[in-house]
Each structure stands twice: as C-alpha cells, then as structure tokens.
Length: 94
Image: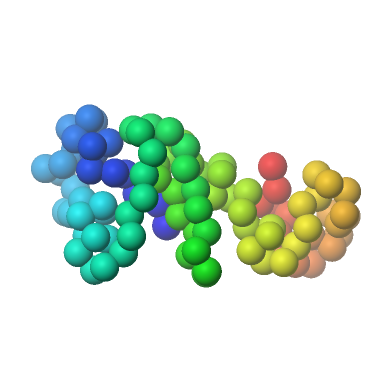
C-alpha cells in the first residue's frame, strides 16, 4: 500500500480530483499515519502491511519483500536465482 500525504496531493493540485485523500481516510479508520517531508522516500513494514509514502518510496517498499517472504537477499549471495525463482521472488530483487 502506498499513498500521498495530504500536502503532497495539494502540491500537485490533485486534492479535488481524487475521490478521497489517502492520509485522511487512513486516519478516519484509525490507522497511524507517519510521514516524512514531502517527496522523501519512506517505506515501513508493520506485520503483513508494507507501505510507502509516495511513488519515490516504491523501491524501498519492494526491497522489504524478500525479508517479508522469508527469502534472503540475493545481493548477499545467500540464495541463488533458482531458489529465488522457486520462492516467486526473482522479479522483486534490486
């Protein structure tokens, strides 16, 4: 899950285009919404939810997937591509 903070939506003049503001909706349903200054990448994992603040956060969010799925990072040399392919994670490695 990823979404713009309210200020980021306002900065690109989309607050009246989108059906709802992600930050407002998450807060409305009781979520804790954490953010960095506008356009800074931020990704966090909380249990089974991986989320990023904005599109700049996509790579950070994706990099949490191997750990989340229980697959070691291939860049560390701890798994080969065949193991990662079997685990369905090959496409997510950076």
